[in-house]
Length: 260
Image (tube, rainbow, N blue to C red; front, top):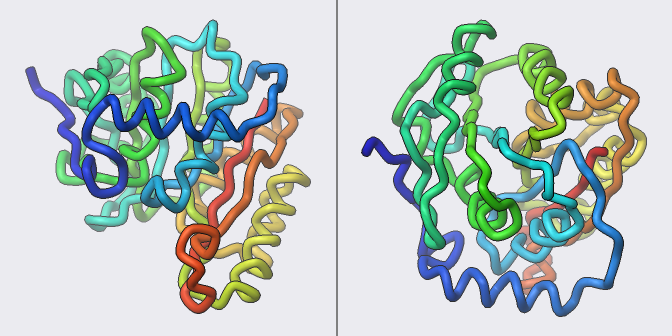
């Protein structure tokens, strides 16, 4: 079987299923009891779990996943330059807790339907998407994956795809992004607050006022699509690498949020 193999297991996240389950269970001991939301999208960070795992888990933990059958996973390419975006056409997606099937029919449909999409195998060694899969595997049962890794593409080109996905109650969109990179703690919070406010306000134009999210294209696209469909948002968690490292000189910001 043609499989999307793991690229960052053992570095960004644990390579064993028991360690992943233990990590998530430990995170959940610190999460307050809450009602679960039927959400259409998750915005989630993609650093090593020691830095951003709690933030990511906090959003996935809030979801009612009972009707979700397909997860459309969107993240920026860090390893290779891509013109447009690549949709994974492997048969399955490897994870430490078991492989997930890839929805090939839907993936091929996207490539045929939307300009700028193709399948570039080298793009699918990407940590921005892969780091989300253990959470998807833990919380979403019996789902199929669609992995989209984007490079040089305008956010407007992704909006129709996301809007179409939103209209099916069995779809969940996961958009992966970190926030600012390698500023002082004070500067990082200044830039990150622009991103946080844009998400809270459901206003993608605010992102252009200084948000330094590495996945700003996907973030703009999902906010734009959600705004056009009169959806709501909630920022679930914000933290920085300082919380884990105590290094206030080269800080990276992390946010998780829900769209419903």
